[in-house]
Length: 211
Image (cartoon, rainbow, N blue to C red; front, side, top):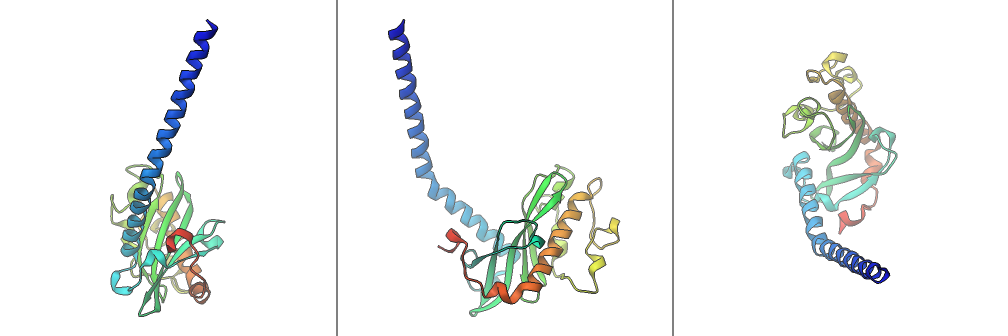
């Protein structure tokens, strides 16, 4: 009986080692492919929020880290600096809307040097299908409503959903989600306008994004 238990234990140990080795080999073989896919996705997202006509550099490489409560996080957030003929021409900043209906919503907001929005996208969210997920371009074009807008002293009231007296549509049965996104986009624009010079003078320090 004892011998059988020892044999079974040895067999299980060998099986566990083999499985661990297989997982390690699989990770090693697929890591580069996954990294390449993530990089290509990031490139596509950046080119969606900052038109190719506005830059001639590789946006994903021109990354610096920025930090502000206005960006919805206590952690540094990536900002991608667009240049044209070696001069700053725009920026795309990642931000968090912490007050979504089902948790945080991660955004990417693109602007020209004057702070006019050239595009914005939701990167990740957990909003309710059929309700809050209308912030996703795969569902509706709602988020395109930010294009061409900026934040000024005179239009603060407009930067709310219509239910709150602003100019942005809310969703039927789901006001919390668009309210959170509108607020986050507004704060991202405000952050950029208040810190533009400092951001453009920062080193490119996002690690692998600059390889």
